[in-house]
Image (cartoon, rainbow, N blue to C red; front, side, top):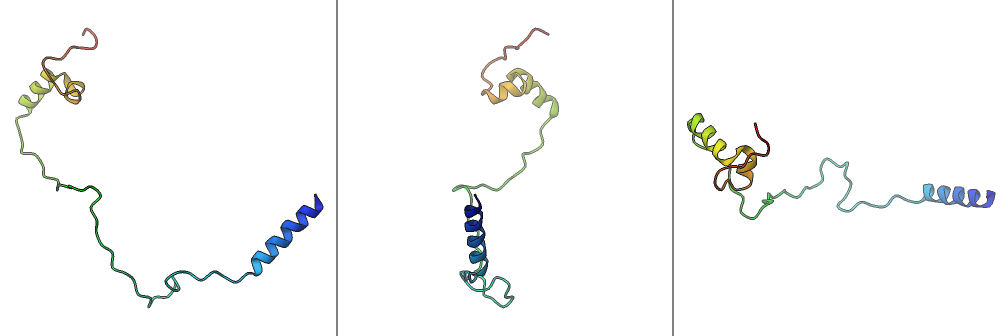
Length: 88
């Protein structure tokens, strides 16, 4: 047990005395170092800009949502009249 503790201690002492590994591209603390310009790359291949929808009558939208079955019906495709999950 003591021999393994001594071996680990010797390894740590040798590692502390080892020279620092040079960084790729120069010193990161150098304010005069050259930096590559960054380029923008789209995350998705066909990214479309956001455009808000035109305002619509809220009563029409509510009636349409009711016919589709609320949020659940809209997520399922909203085909035909909705079947309620429970009786009101």
